[in-house]
Structure formats: C-alpha cells, structure tokens
Length: 607
Image 1: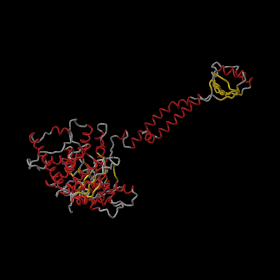
Image 2 (image 1 turned 180 degrees about the vertical axis):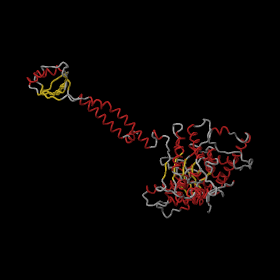
Image 3 (image 1 turned 120 degrees about the horizontal axis):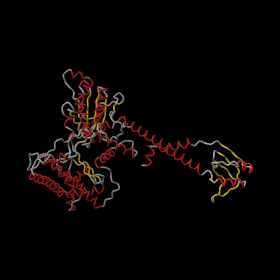
Image 4 (image 1 turned 30 degrees about the vertical axis):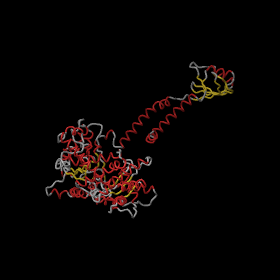
C-alpha cells in the first residue's frame, strides 16, 4: 500500500525529502559545527595564548585553539561565542598581544532563510491541492466540470464499427437497419408521413452485444456516437445528474445527426416509488430530466436515443410509453448458427489445430453469450501459450470451457478415499440415469475433478436447441437430477450434502411445473402464479398470493409427488443396472474423467 502511494505521489515524496534534508542540514550546521562556550572562557583562552585564529561575523565569534581545552567537562578545539551587547574595547588589544589571527566577515541576513523555511510547509500544502485538482480535471471530475456532459464521443471516421463486426443477432440487425436508413436518408420516411421511433431499447442478457450493436448502427450510418452509462449521471450532489442530461442533449443537437447510447439505463431508470425505503431524489430527478428531454426534441433533429438493459422488469413504465423508448428490440443469447459465426469471428487471428471442430463446439456451448465465447477462446489461447504450443487444440478449448462453467481446479484439496468413492458414485448415478432415459439430453462427459463450484460434474448437451419443454423432457431431467442422491442411497444407504444443488434446482423446476406450467395432476390446467422472487421487497410484501392457504398446501404436496416420482424412476434404473453403476464409478476413480461415449459403452447402449 505504501509502495503504491509513493508511485502515485512521487513528486510530493521527493519535495518532502528535500524539505527534511534542508531542515536537518540547517540544524546540524547551527548546533554541531563547533562548541558553544562562554565569553569568559573565550577571554581566558586568549589570556593563555591558546587561541590560534578567530572569525568575527557581526556579534558571532568562531575560532580555533592551538591545543584542546575543556569547558563544562567537554573537550573542544573549535568554538563559538558572542560579543557582549555593551561591547569590549580591550578585546582587539589582547588579540594583538597574543598574536591571534583575526578574520572579519559582514553580518549575514538570515531573515530570508527563515522565511523560506517557514513558508515551505505552506507551499507544500498548496502544491498538493493543485496536483489533486489537476488529477480530478484529468478524470473529468473537476470542480468546474461536475455538471458537464460525461458521454464519450466516438469519431466514426477513425473508429468505425459496422454490422459485419457483429456476428449473429440477425433479427436485431433487421430492426436496426431501419434506424440506419432513417439517419442516412431521413426524407425517405418523412415524405411518406412516417416517424422513426425516438427511443430504442435493447434488451438482453449480459454479453450479447447490445453496446456493439448500437455502435454498429452509428458506423453504418456514419454519424456521431455518444456513449454513456446510467451510473455516469449519478453524483453525490442533487441536481448534477439532471444537468448532465441537459448538457448531453445540447451536445447531441450540435452534432446531429447522431446517436445517444445509454448503457445500463436501469441505474437511473428504476421504477419510482418502489420498495420500502422511498425514492432516491438524485436518481428520480435525473430520470425526470431524461423523460423531459425525450419529449423535447423533434424528429427533424435526427437524434436517435438508444439504451440497453438486462433488467427491463425493474424499469419505470414512463420510459417505455409511446414517444419515448417505445421500440424494444430483444437481443437473445446466440443460437447454434450464431455461435458458429461468433466462433469464426473470434478465431480469425488465432492458430487452431486441424482437429478443432467449430461446428461441434457451437453445439456444445449452448447458453454461452458472445462475451462468454470470446472469453473461452482467450482462456484457451493462454493455456496453449503456457504449454509453449504453437496452436490451440480442442483440449485447451475444452479445459477453458470447463473453467468457465465449473470454476478453477482445486489442486490443494485433499479428499479421502471414501469421499472420492462417494463423489464417483454420485456422478455415475447422474450420468447413467441420463444415458438410459429416452428424453434426457445426451451425456457428454463425467468428471470427479474438484473445482471451485463443485466436487464433480456430469455434462449434458442437447443435440439441438430447445425452445419448448415437453412434460416428458422435464420429468426425465428431474430424474437425472435425482440420480446422484439415488446412488448415495443405493450404494451407501445414506445421504450427503453433495446433492444440495441438485435438490434446489429440482425443487425449483417442480414448483414451476405446478404453479406456472400446469403439469401436475391436481392443477393440470391452471397457472397459480409465478414461482420466482420479486425484485423489490415492497412489491413482494404488497402483492399477496393468488391462491388460498389450502391450495398452497396442495401445491406443496404436488411438488413432493413430482420429486418422489423422479427419485423412484432414478432408483429403479440404478437398481436394474447396478453392475454398470459400479463399473462407471470405478472408471471415474481410475481416470477422474470419462467421456460420454465410454458412459454409453459401459451402460451397453449403442448410439
């Protein structure tokens, strides 16, 4: 911490060191150069003829003896003393008689030196304040720039992003192409009496390329691009955010046609009056000013305001009414084809082995966003460089994917043989149930390598992406989740904490089947309400259940029935194939990881 402070304030530290040196030098020069003696002692040494030479400087006398003398039990040869204020007319005659060499110097003026020494700490303080002010100015946080526009303006002529730089997201590109057409030729739409939306909201999970899409629109249209995040408007002073909004739109009008992009708009656009603690004055004033500015500029000004969020459910309804952010474009997680395009895009400048199959990798990375894929390939590159390889193999890519999905390997974790055996049977139970059930996703790999997020894992990847989940698929998925607990019960006649996450996920899915999807016997065609949690505590307390307490008890029983059926199905499969369970668990103990093909081979299933 001290080293970091010294590096950041090197000039201040040097100046402080110089000040301390000068102060110490002045002290040493004044008190350690010679021995201070009394005037009487000086006269006595003169009468003895022991004084060799003296230097008279005003009232100060400095001299040197021929032989050492003692004063106050201290031996000295160099001395200093002062002339009496009333003078000594006989001194010069005594010095002549004793043959003392006398040197004279003009009286020095120490007032300036004392002024410098006294003012130096004050100068240090002013210098420190000035440097801090310059640092705040460099970060855009100067005292006189608190309310200025904090948006970063990109010059499309120097840094241009187009739709070619954005892989996938075809539906979003089609919607945004209208914005490009309007900015490049606004008369085409206006002559037909049409109006382009003033505000466009990009909604999607993190890492799906919402910011990149907004910049691509500006690049395609060749217009200015103002980029700012919702948190940039917030400040400790009330009213600063509103002023920054006004300045942002003023700068946009000067650079029209242009695009204003507000990322993470939920930082200032949260629903007003929600929760128990009341509103935040600064955020609400900023939001009110933004809504006012959206209503204030006209279509002919050629300004498009775009925003992005991954939490549209918490936004204030006033943001999405007609005339404001009335066009909502969903940017979904990439499909298999989109992931393939992204992989080709991110591997253009990477050296891949011939064995790397990007089509297979696209199918095996369901649920990955574009940012996840880029991160995975970068991690694989680092792993290949660590091994001094000239290219990236499928092994590095798979290791990087496991690192993202399950965390780092825990090399320092030492498990007992009993714990390893328990984990091996647990994961073997998951994988065997998944291998035998017809509607379950194919097993890709089973591992008992301990990682930061789990002690083992069974990876299943669907053959094709699913958008609708049949009841049979969900029932088989629940049985696979129960496979680990069933194996523990069947082999060891016990239950462990290793099944905690399985039980949580299974219970959540079973509750959704009852409450939302109408997949239970007693509530087969009813949606009783959401099983999710409310975003705001105030909403959760203020919104009561849509069903009675008796129905709530019936729901719990239905959830319990679904989970028990899943457990019984898994237990039946493992009981009938106990030998395969033992063989797979032993294979895991021997190799720690078993590929999906080996799992199906042990189970006696041909694929």
